[in-house]
Length: 502
Image (cartoon, rainbow, N blue to C red):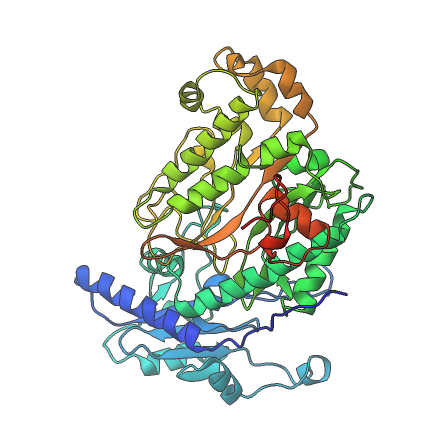
C-alpha cells in the first residue's frame, strides 16, 4: 500500500505580501525613471466561477494567476487593489446573497478575509468606486494601473479589471503588465518552498507509478495513480496541466492526453512510456517527465535513445552547464548537438554534426523548446519581455524564452528525441537533409515513439539546483521498477561488472 513521507506545508500569507512589496518597489522605480508621480492604484480583477457550457454545473474554480500571485485568494469574484503611494492592500469581496448560506456554507464577514489574507482593508465589490476615491489623496480622478498584456505562450491577452463606475477613474493599460510579469520570473524563498513541495510530491507519485505499472494496463490508469497519490497524500487538488500518459507510438505526440487522445491506449510488452505529469500546490506547480519501458527492462534500442548516448546525456549536460549569464538558446543548441551526435553514433544518422546543425536537423527529432519558466503557471510569464524576439528557425521558434539565465529563475530542462512521421518523412525527402539519414536503420524506429526527460531547475548564484528527484539512470529505473526503494542504496545495486555502484 502506498504511503508518503511528505506533509502539505502551511502557506504563510507573507508570501503574497512579499510579492506585493516587490511589485510596488518595481513600479515606483519605473515611474520615477519616467518622472511620473508615485500615486494611483494597481487594480486586478480575480477569476470568476465558470459553468460547463449552458448548464448550471460549476467547474472547479482555480484563481487567475496574477491575482493569486499578489493576493493568494482562493475564492472567485474578488478584486484587489494596491495603493502605490502607501503600499496598502485592499480586497473587495463579492456581496453574497442570503441563499448562499443554504447551498454553499457560511457567509464569511469581511474580517475573515482581512485576517486570512493579511491585507490592510476589506470592502465589497460594489464599494470599489467609493473606497478608492476616499483612499486617493491627490487632486483629480484617481489613476488605476490595470493589467493588460500579451501572454507569449498562449497569444492571449490578460483581462483588465472591469466594474461599474470605472469611467470615474483615469486608467493606464500599458505600465503594469511587463513589470508584474517580470516580478513573477524571480522566485522568493517562500515561493521556492512551494515549488519544491510540488516537485517532491510529484516525484514521489512518479516513482509510485513506476512501481505499479503492469503490461496490459490502460494509459489512464497511470494518470489515475498519479492524481490519486498527489491528492491523497499531498493535498494537491489541482494538476499543473493535463497529464500526458503516452505509450508506444503515442509517446511521439508531444501534447498527448487531450480530449481527442485521452490516455486510453492499452500498452504492450516492449513499449516505452512517456509520462509528463506535475501536481500544483497552493497555486505553485511542477512539471516532470519520466520515460521508461513498461516491462521494467530497457532494450538495446531504448537504451540508445534514452541513455547516456542521447536524451539523458543532453539533460545532465545542460543542467551541469547552467548558471547565471548562460543563454537559453545556447542550452537548446547544446542539447540538440548531443542528441544528433548520439544518433550518429547509433548509425541512425550519417555525416557531420556541424552540417546537421546548420540545416536545423535537430528540430526534426526535438521540435519543441528545451524548457520554460515555471511557477504559478506551468508555462510561467516573462519569456519574451523587454523587446526580445522569438527566433524563426525550426526548433528555435518553439523556445518559450531566449533570455540569459539569472539567479532566482525556475526553468524546466526537458530535452527529447522523437520519431514523428510528420517531420521525418519531409526531412528524408528533402534534397538538403536526406543525405543525413540511414534509411535502413531509421526504419527500425518507425513505431518507437519518443523519449523526454524533464526536471525543474532553480538557478542559483553560481550554478543551479535540480528540484526534481526521480530515477533517471537506466539502472536506477530498472531497480525501482523491480521493487527497490527510492532513493536507492547504491552500494546494494550490482553494476555491470558485478560490483556495487559507489
